[in-house]
Length: 303
Image (cartoon, rainbow, N blue to C red):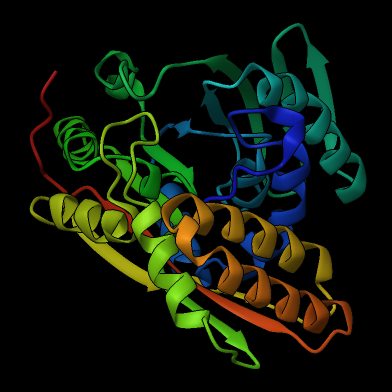
């Protein structure tokens, strides 16, 4: 689910927001698909990984310990603020987890008992430069909370490139349109409908697929690869007040953009929900899916 309201990175996603959502992201992810990918990765002679929309490296921090030794990561993002934060975030994670880390120029090397990786990062215009990326030397293409920003044409091009070069794909935390507050309140249904309309605006890739994006990619990949889809819903607990508040504020703003005539109802909804959050009486489920696609053995590669 998109939230771009945090002000310390105007026009994009802020490091503060990405840090706030990371625990919910990691808790939501499909363990079954992670294990399935890890089993596949151990059988590969090389593991070059291309991550799209890396932010500050949350997806890397989750996946890297599962994928074994000698990983080579290239992390891509358009936002220089997030890329500048990336090595600092990886270092903090390594220190917290007791992982060895070495930094030299624009290369970070991390090593744990069961995994090791070399990590590079670079700025990339994913919306317009997809076909120029190094799919030919990549075994895994991955991303987190990215697909709902993208268009049908972009998703189909991504699938074509992955199929042509026999790349595995793991795209996680794809928002699917479901939001459920507890306790329920009047105007919940209307705000969800407005948010799902807002998701369909142009986010830089053309008209966004929003809640349908995960399905579109899975369908395109499934024509030639072994594709699996699993739920990865956020389950946000009453004590996670800061995350709930950030979502509430961002969603109100998005709804007001589409329905300024509903400003009074939105203000009442926001105030009522804010009181529930503040008193730790509010919980929240946000629907997501994880999509994993693995190349079919014997498939011909297009160079």
